[in-house]
Image 1: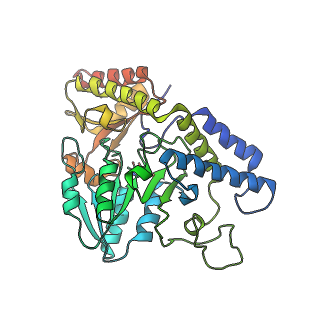
Image 2: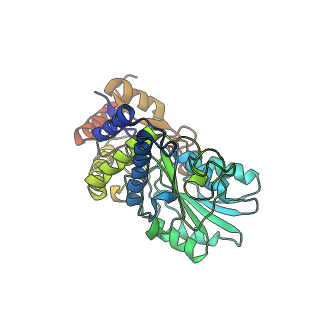
Image 3: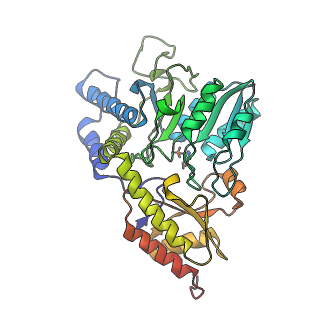
Length: 385
Ligand SMILES: Cc1ncc(COP(=O)(O)O)c(C=O)c1O
């Protein structure tokens, strides 16, 4: 049996109810949401709305219609950045960003947006809030940062960043790709204006789902336009949410699964999910720290991090380690740069990267034991690769 420890890339397996909800949609519903007046279209629209509602409850969003569905977090981040920023605006970000934030920002920088990257130094790779506040200029329009790092698991303090943004009247955008569903995210408490999330990681939905929350006070320019099922008599894009930013047939079957994933999380409870993930992460950290030649990168306290651990092994490339775990032990991990070159440059692990073990609520302590046994075996000199 495969031991899946690559949940930061995409979660697997999914709870049974996610599969059932998608199966139900495919077999019994099938209609295009919000497009036609017949029963199956209405049912499909209801399922899509229910998913918005579940996510609004999870992220403490007042109005579910302020959530725009996208294919993933990448699309959500692009809609937000390109819809908000103009040449001459200044953006502050961090060096821990995933390429889904780094590349659109780099592109916009080349088009005249000013960009400051705040360094996040070892050993914790935390955001330096003093430096963040000092970097604010007259034209600073946005602070855009990741919530939980996909490389070292560091979690940025959203409420404190939000306070700084509020004090200076700046928009605050968060990439919650890693934290949505796995760590508390409260849009109201943190004063978040734009929240990008993906459906297929901690939220247990399928690939091809994600979304963007937009503060009701913000108007983003659409980066694409088209059919919405509303105001069909007009050839101009509607100006109300979510239609203004959400054109074309959505992934309704995927959203049925995402809604079931969200309901699963609400039912199990985030504190229960966090508790299990902290226990598993502690087991990984403590086990790996006791193996000679293994070096963990980043914060060691599981309470302050996402359930993922990045490490390197003396004398072995990350890809050698990953291949060994896969071929000899059926353990799936991710090796390399994890789409985050800036982070690895800060960490001193560029260009080979690290081995990343990422857990979910559905992993077990005995799977972690097998991982530790495998790494221990690999660390012994007699292992022939
Ligand atoms: C921190 C972070 N942001 C954004 C993304 C992009 O997510 P998606 O591929 O679903 O767009 C990822 C995916 O790994 C991520 O870890």
